[in-house]
Length: 479
Image 1 (cartoon, rainbow, N blue to C red):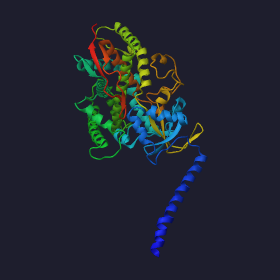
Image 2: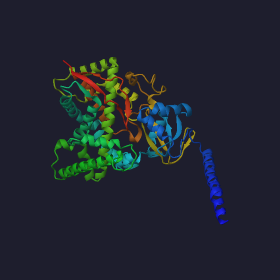
Image 3: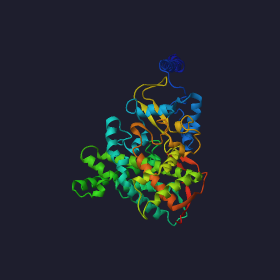
Image 4: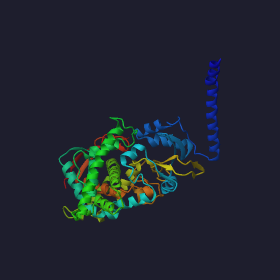
C-alpha cells in the first residue's frame, strides 16, 4: 500500500504541481507584461531563442535582409527576440540610434560576449564605463584625433609608398584585402605605436580574432582555446615593449621622434599614474583589431565601387592628378592635400554606407527603459544596426544605389553610423580616414587595376570580408 501511495504522489500529484507552478509563473509574467508593455516580437525556443537563425544569417552576411528586415516588416522598427540566451530588443532608425548611443552610461552600457571580453581584455575601453572610460579614452585620443595625426601624414605617405614598392611592384595579381590588412596592421604598429612588426605577428593576431565571437570554451583545439593561446603571446610581447619603453623614459634614453609615438604617450601616462600596464596592453590589442580589420574592409569596398562605377573613378583620378600637379617630384602629401580629397572621401563614405565595416553593437539596459511607448526591462540586451538607417529610404534616397554626391549635403544625426556614435564612437575614425585617402592616392596615381571577380560576395566571420580576398590584376601606370 505505501508503494501505491508513493507511486500516486510521484506520477500524478508531482507533475500536477510542476504544471501548476509553471502556469503560475506564466500568469505572473503576463501580469507584469500588462503593467509594462514589452515590444512586439517572438522569443523563440527557451534559452536558445532565435540564436541559430541569427548566426546563420550573419555567417552569410544576410543578417539585415534575412533576420532584421523581415521582423521590421512584421513588428515595426522596435521588436524583441532572444539571442545567445539573452532577451534582446533590436531598434532601428536614426532616432533610436541617437537614443541608445547617446545614453551610454546613463541608461545602457556596452555589452559584449564573454569570449570577446576575455580576448580583447577586461581593461580595454570597450569594457570601461563612466569616468574611467572617459579618462582612458582621453589618453588614447590625444594621438588618434585629427590634430594628433597631422604630423603623421608624411610618415604614412612614405610608409605606404615603400609598402607598394616592395609588395606590388613587379606583380600582376594581388589580394587587395589581404594586402591592405597587412599594410594597416604595420601602420598601427610601426607608425603609430613605434613597435617593429616581427614575422608571424599578423597571423597571431588573426588567430585571436577568430575566437572573438566563438563559444568561450577552453577545450584544447577549439577556436577559443587557440585564440586564448595567441592572446597570451601578444600580451607578453606588448608587456615586454611597455617595460622596455618605461626603462628608456626613466633613464632619459628615449629619442625625440619616438617620444611622439602613442606607445610612449601611454607609458608616460602609466608613470604618472593615469593608466596601468594592463590597461595599456588591453587597449593596444583593441586598437589593432579595431583599426586593421575594419579599415581593410572599407578600403576593399571603396576600390570595388570605383571599379564598378567608372564615372566615379574618373572624378577620383582627376582629383588626385590635380593634387600631384602641385607637388615636386618625390614630395610627400601634407594635411592641405588631404583636405582637397573631398570627392574621394565621399566615395569612401558611400562605400561604407552600402558595406558598413560593423553591423552594429549590443548594449545592456542598466535600468528599466521607457521608449516609444514600450518598456525595455533592466538587464535586457539592446542591439542597434547600421543597416537600419543606411538602407532606409527615409534617410537615403534610393538607398541601394551608389551615389557619393549624396554626401555633399547634410543628413540627420545618427543616420550614418559606420563608426558608431556617442561616447563610444570609434576612437580610430580619423586614422582610418587617413589610411583610406592616402592609399587611394598612391594606387590610383601609380597603378591601373581591375577586379578579377566582379561578383565576389561578402562573408562574415565575425567581421565582413570579401570572400575571395578581392584579387585584382595590376599594372604600373606609364606617366
